[in-house]
Length: 341
Image (cartoon, rainbow, N blue to C red; front, top):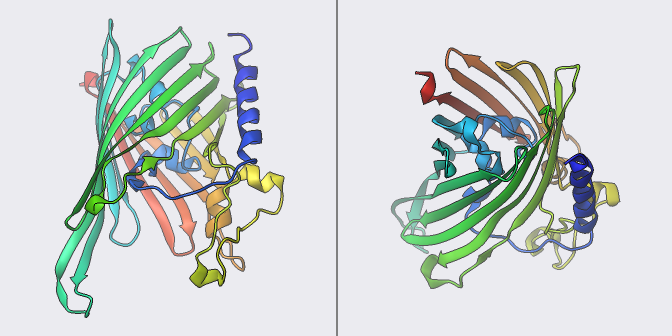
């Protein structure tokens, strides 16, 4: 275990080297699988798989952070997203000495109300759309410092009278150094497929996402730095503009250089942690900034920030992410442990 730092850095570099070789393709259903529920994760660039915490919503990023310290933990989060969209999470965990640690979570997103109309324009009423997911997580230590985790996620999507079922799986490893200053994780997220499709359409395979993350807390200063490489199966993240916007299809938007290609795979975060009861965090999501900023006014698009504080027996967290000039996400999380009562 002495060289585990080097191993994780090597894996990270090899994965990033590979990521610039291929080309990203396709869209997928079940967008709920890709949302950030945890306020802390939202404040650190939107995703970190090499960072532990006390919020069960973080298991969506790496199920292997689940350990015995989560026993009897209860977490809830809420995100008033954009337009009339909102989503949230609730979960609980329990540890059994001989079996390991289990967690149960429920995720839901509501897309609001829509006007139903015929082709002629005659309004016939309204309808709703949304997605729900149950997350069953399990973890077990492989050694005093290495933990393995698994999440199974049945997911259901509804658009008016059309329905779709699917199932996704997350596999993860998480490592903590003896002094717990260094942490690292590897996750294969959202490996699965549709079980039933909308209106008997062809079934889709969900695109799995390989992610590698590291975090390091300074020994003599209250700062922790986090870095996660994501979408490592997706190549250079090039994409095609629709013909109506570009005038010609099959033309890819090329990044300027290799550095930008690599940067689009990263989520970067930093925390100021003066005590175990308070933190302030900031981060950047380079891909979000590159794709959603306005060329003449980039502003703070792609940047994130947040804070957390413990009051009595409850941990409150807030996270904010700027998607574009017209839209900012606000994430609220609260956690507590039933054993404290």
